[in-house]
Amino acid sequence: MTDPVKRDSPGKIGRGQARTRLARRAVVDAARTLFLERGYAATTIEAISRRSDVPSATVYRLFSSKLGILKTLLDTSIAGDDQPLAVEERPDVASTFTAPDSHQLLAGFARITTAINQRTNDVYRVLVSAAGSDPAAAELLSELRQQRDRGQGRIARSIARARALKPGLRERDAADLIHALMSPEVYRLLVGDRGWTPERYQQWLATTLIQQLT
Image 1 (cartoon, rainbow, N blue to C red):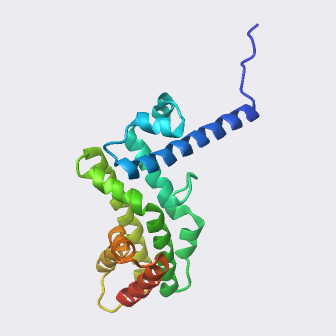
Image 2 (tube, rainbow, N blue to C red; image 1 turned 45 degrees about the vertical axis):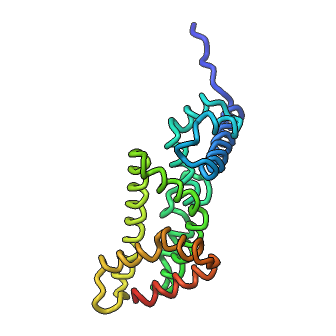
Image 3 (cartoon, one colour; image 1 turned 90 degrees about the horizontal axis):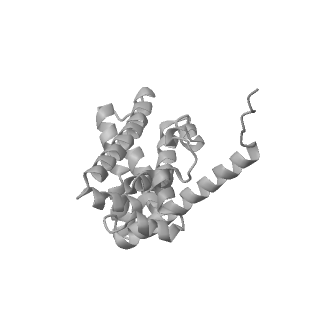
């Protein structure tokens, strides 16, 4: 007669998942601080481990590498939390695509873009800097830009399907304009370099998108 298989109780599994989540957050928060203070290249896994009070072995188990930490930091900064839900599936983004007219759709994405740029501005600069000397970081930057392209192309497609694009403006050209106007670089120039408030940037972005596209 075989012994019964021992299984962890739901409560024990739940506590383990909670500890893992706390550890991941601690590592990501520590990495953000160190990347901004020292730069990506000068920050080590060991330094992140010490700052987060999470053992190095656990850091490697959770993220595999320093680049894995940076990717998670970017993902959570873009989304605004660590929930495993893609940006396009999030309620505020999904509902914006169902806006009753193109002006409301563009104003909605100006708001969403402003919030994302606020959360990611410093981290995005870390990635761009790292990409200059680290091929893996350069590949991550390329992937991030491709994700942006897909999302912004979907905005242009929605307006084109609603027959709301400005006469003579092709869908591809609309996507190019959206890509440029919503870019982190423009946000940094206006808010970081020129001292605009995020609120002023959001209003400008909404107005400019509507003027240029419809």
